[in-house]
Image (tube, rainbow, N blue to C red; front, side, top):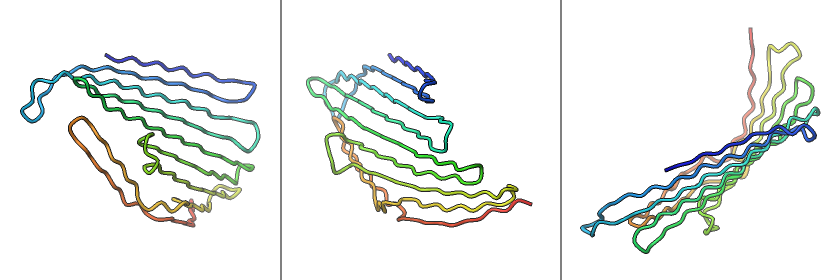
Length: 180
């Protein structure tokens, strides 16, 4: 059984779009683990997101997204819970038609009960486009905080999984593009 709800509204006084999305589900299933008796399992899941994007008439705009996920697995008298939080924000600066810049921040907490799993990324982009539009220059900086790895541990009623990803270090790149 699952249900979904979403609402999006433009608020003219603050030149902003706000969107709320909720998704929930419930699942009951049976299984056998390592020659055990037949187990009665239940799975609850809630995914929610709140987005706020501005469209001001001046050069600075914001984009924000907050995502919260909750999962609970139950069997017999035992329960396992996972709660994750993801917050993404972007600051956009547009000066005239030729200069565009953005600063993006992504925060992810894959296990709200464990502080050591938190991870934060930050990227920057600057673009200059010539008045004729036939060439441009880009300056891009990725992984500004120089995060070197990402680790995540997941536990269920019968497994433990560990994931670790090596990440590219801080990268700063200058590029040009030409159109003929």
